[in-house]
Length: 493
Length: 112
Image 1: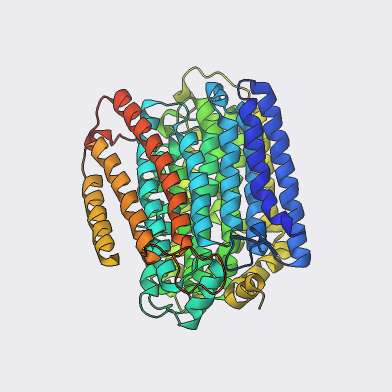
Image 2: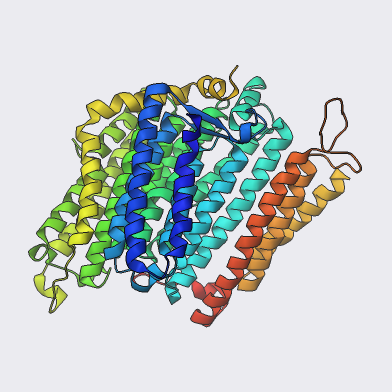
């Protein structure tokens, strides 16, 4: 049954290739995309169930034994992230036909979409550091294609910057892997972890760890490396922004979580202590960015940064509560960011602008959409009983236990400001003056609302059903805290 | 031999960073290609440079060339080749649409 591990990579890949042939027939590719995303989702569900029942799935590709060949490891963390990814992909596949993509659907939108999913799933599943680089490139290549789709003046300009920063950090990634290979003589993550453990992370190993952190932090948009993110995430179509905001930065933070809970965990005062500071600064600067603008898409894009800050806080504190909080917050944030980008996409579509100053009184026309945004804001800011609250509670509990009082205060204040930044859209856009919109014509948005409701329902369930989800997350945290389990499961000693 | 190649890749890195920090778009693109060359040569030195030795095929061979860095470089070369060609096209289109290849003028403003 170990071949299950390759399915989350191979099914989207095959879907993408099939969709290339139906490129010019928009109706067929829409239907096929929905079908494939549902197949993906059900496979991911089955894998998740299988992992929970039977433990990690280890696949040695081509039957090459563990430290030599490339291995795929679907442990409980990877499985749940693959499931979340496919959940978002399904919502986006149903949203896309109504998203006003127009011509773009004919320019290989759906194939690129599935290549992206394949790359993201691959990055979650792989147990080999160089293979992780390859999957990063797969998802980045797809994202380059998606971000320029349309080819507007602004879009070309911003995607060029996006491409340059990613090319640069990818090359640094290769260099960091080369360094690591020279020191430990392997690229298998479990094997690296074992060898780093043997020498207790002496000498140059910490420096290599920091170099890897720099690479992942660029991809994850942490302070001070987030400057490329906000603008390049707002230029493409909202459905593409939703995919980017929900998945791409999270792959970066997942890599940090993996590498700094498995490999570089023996010099905490040098690495993990710094993470806590970076977390605080990411929260502050991200939320300041969100407050500084009247562009609704930009507000959501800036809100990615404090969320990443919360997740890195959990990795920095590194105890059971905080790691559980990180995992919980990661899953919560993937879903809610996708939902928020989609909601904002609808608002920009009906208002014809993303400038908040030109909107007002939308609640008269779209009450349901308004209350969806209201709930989404509460979920994001972490008002109980929603999922953001559980994640933050665990994170701050973990930080409090280690005596990091300052970061707890920063985290709580940031949450308030996040709530304000989203509420600003609600207050100005949905309440506000009805006349600000001029002669307003109502546009049909039913097809776009349904996927948002689908995502929000999951998000709310994640919070209200915390009693059911928490034991799973807690076991993942315990698993992450003990690198031995991962090493033993891969190297089978 | 490793020392010479290491210095060479260091020079390539330095030249790449210098070029990336320029304002002109084409120079930046050239900078990224130099960066990838530097990184690839660097991986090469990591497995120790040897001439005339076989990659290990059978037991009992103690002196062999490490095949893994070469596999890594091949993968990485293919990727950076693809990305560079995409980057060139994108740079060309951006320059045409925006009527400038100066990064200073490609900043943009809020609410576009």
